[in-house]
Length: 580
Image 1: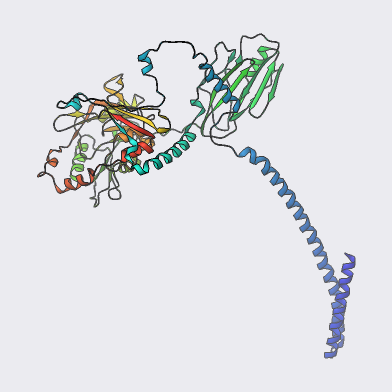
Image 2 (image 1 turned 180 degrees about the vertical axis):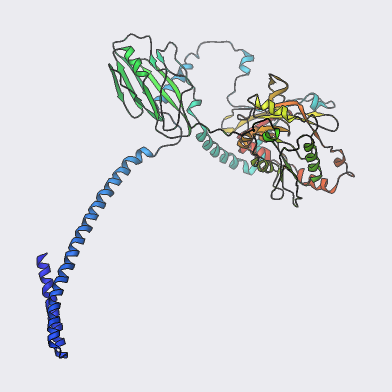
């Protein structure tokens, strides 16, 4: 650096002298210029020395910064390589290969005695599920007046024919792709068959073991019983978590792996003491999954489930300090054009429930304002439809229960909402229907049972029958069923959970209950009755108003296969039977 600074000083000195000579030739102020030249010589050298020193220091700083950056970069890259393998997981629920082999061997063991002869009990065998369902209707019908009411016949439909022949194969292939995706999302290890071996010395929990995602629990009930050995040993294997010993017991050897643990001891009592101190920690996050733990010892294998899930936060509704039907129930309806009938409904409600909120969804082309105390009127796009209106109305409910009514119903003294609330408050039902009375006196509940059978890749079988399952204890006029009439009270959060398919815009009802199959617990009480406005006048050609004619034009449009197309693709049904 000294040589560089000296060279810099020499160059600066030469430059300063040359400048002073040129100025001396051009000016008479020789003394001042000489002084200036000396200053330039000194300042040039010092300035250059100072600048070179700064540059040298800066180069050192830049070099140090580069080295530091490289070190941190290498450390980060190394950390990324290590962490990427542990933080990237397959979120599809799966089992460890050893656990899969265990469950498969258990299933094979069940079939090991198939060569033993037996006689078939035809009645019992008829109740067993078939390998591939079949939809079969009644071959003959009774041709007498009102035969469909007296002797309901079972009809059947092949749902693929809801599509044009040229499109059926493409629809079928797309449905299979979407169904496979659904199956992967919804499958759970909790649905797997686990068979406990006879006389096994292994003790373990069989159900009720739960852990929050990424949390730990002690595994209760683990033990090795009634064995005499020189060395007692057991193993634990999981696929979504790891095992640890909260405390290591003397005389016990614990060998830990990522998702596997071996424990051994010459003392059975010490081993069992250690087993009471084993923890399970969920390591692969999933909000709702099941891990199957493999628990084994020499000659014996077992498996048990650990449920991994967040506790679902409740959705509670404050009923107020005193019983008030208005704080518990909201009435919801959908209207289209029929403002005269809607007003009759409102007037009848106010006779018995003056402060219950009424929510109206309206998709009329030229909506008329509907106003009044405790009335909410929501306007929809023109002709949006029946189920879309239900979704809109129910989305605005803020009470625990919602009562669904058609816009041409009339409340009477038999329309006792308190009875419906009592049933819902004292049972596990999610929805309870009432009865609708026509002007003729005929009263309908529209009770149906709905079931499905596994059908493989071709699709499942849907079966709809009139009737119910059984009566409800404590409520003699009420039964458990699967579908009810368009007059029902339901838990608001449950109704939103199932929802109404907005593609069903004109005629739909049972489709909602089919979507809710497996999640909706449905009841029906025939002593809670609402009246139906008379349709006789509107059915007569000379009695039909312009509004009635326009309404019928939209309400009863030409036949549509939309229901069957949804059953086939959305719900994965291949056929349907019904005795309606």
